[in-house]
Length: 128
Image 1 (cartoon, rainbow, N blue to C red):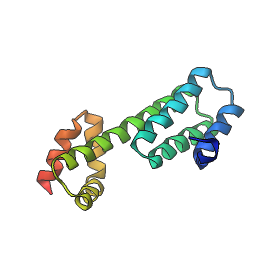
Image 2 (image 1 turned 60 degrees about the horizontal axis):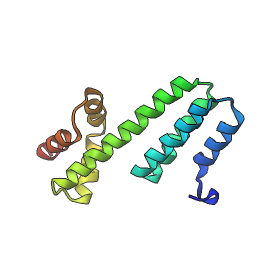
Image 3 (image 1 turned 30 degrees about the vertical axis):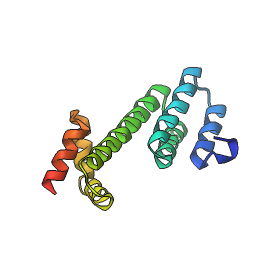
Image 4 (image 1 turned 135 degrees about the vertical axis):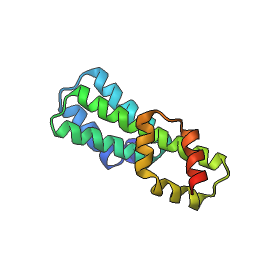
């Protein structure tokens, strides 16, 4: 990705990282977290960058930011896994998006309880 292609929050992230005194490990973590989210979608990458920027500007420490960003990235990967499992069950596009919006709160609970994305997708498909 070229410098010109960096989006709003990723540009802000670079600025925050250069202006604030964070460790080298934190710099690496922040860039890898955004990159991991980018594999899911550009929107998720922007959301992770925004989260890190907002936390840094609020004065959160490195450990707090890392915890919040890891949770965000892990949750987005989980949601992506549920969508992938729904498609694997033969669920059509429009219905997948409908299920995802209907079960938004349930997804967070399932994630927090460690339920597999495949199991959640099967239950969503059966219930609806």
